Image (cartoon, rainbow, N blue to C red; front, side):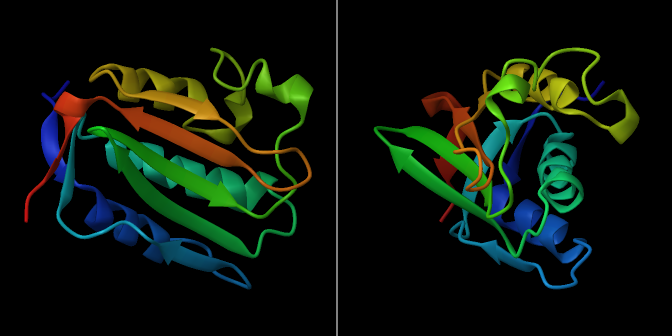
Length: 146
């Protein structure tokens, strides 16, 4: 295990989106440069996992994007796609242990990694209109370096 560190979110996302499978998918990074998040070094795996899940399970995804809002010091790192979304029955178990065993990294592990530094994750998309994963970062876990 490694201690949490400050990480430039835009750079992490950019690297993960470059590694995407491509095809007809447009990868968009709307995160401003110089925003850092205090998180486990495995944050990059969480970002990669969300991209890979959209590619594998999103149906005819044509757009995967990351954005970031900071309101009253609280950050919202958002990964959206324009695929099929997540059905209501899947939302109940999305982050449960043992779900998605056959797909590798898993949302349960992502939730655990984020939780080590107080970051929460939820899925707020509308079924049929794409997935929307929101990582909420506490005020002490986000800063601007420039």
